[in-house]
Length: 50
Image (cartoon, rainbow, N blue to C red):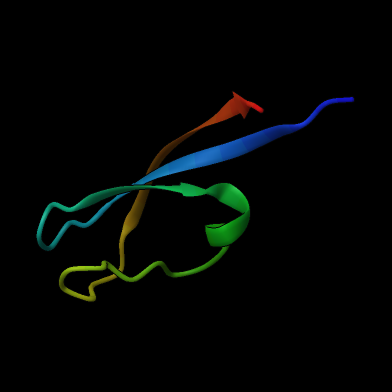
């Protein structure tokens, strides 16, 4: 059984905050920055073995 989770790394162009989120939580969505509220940009993603 394959139980991998794809993770994405996001950064805020406004204030520079970086966060790691499960791809299923953020895929296709505008992700607000937790510090300033600006829209964050997805940097890259990878698979993590569970």
